[in-house]
Length: 351
Image 1 (cartoon, one colour):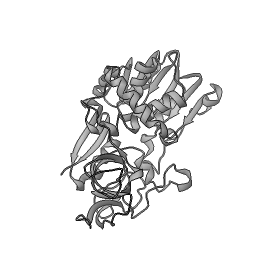
Image 2 (cartoon, one colour):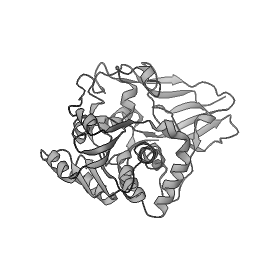
Image 3 (cartoon, one colour):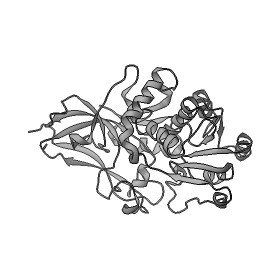
Image 4 (cartoon, one colour):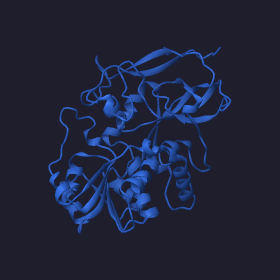
């Protein structure tokens, strides 16, 4: 019989129409205490250590989301908020996992959770790298960057590429893989501050542009003189719309995310330049990383090898780990939507 019988968890109280509400009488999430079920054969009890913060989580709680049109079942009212994370095995009824093992999986916003051992993966620590990078550069963000570049838009050394959200978890890996592994002829980053842009350039971008000044579109036009073959889109909205006019004939768009619209259910920014798709024969290619997820181990091994060779940078600047009280999990997550992070945003739960 387990000595741990209760857990705190954040549940979805109401699907937000617009920006999630973190306080007041009608918050998006509520904090509850729930019973922990007894372990069945093959199951483990996990204690959550780190939570991944991902823009796509907002789409899982959207009131506009249709379950049949999503790649994962949406979070329903009354359910624990979903999240990928790193956890420690505290009890086990599986021969494959021992107490103390660190695993990656989907614990969600909860202190403790029960899982089938087949649904989690044992962490393979790398000397010199914090485990949290398995949620970022060596996790799904790095995998997403590699998958989209090599399998979706099939980037080549003769291609020039623009990357929005270039200082984010996916974007910074796109910059490095495109420049240092594929050898694209030109890599142009877009980020939200001058400081972030200098970091993106340190990663290998030929130039990075701050999207906030009024002169941004003029600067982007100059940087894409002669046009570019690929746009890696992490933000959607106005930047995607403008980039349709900066792509060369037969250009390709990797549609990775649309964070600029995630909290704008009532005022979604559409496309005015869509006719460019026809006139320039453009391809807008949507993708979801789970379609290629069987290749995650080999891509991770490849990225680890490139890091060991010094070809890509994975370090303190590649992530922002926030020590967080359990009661503040939603607040840390919301930093994603205000541009408050550089690299991967990770929640570290205080003991």
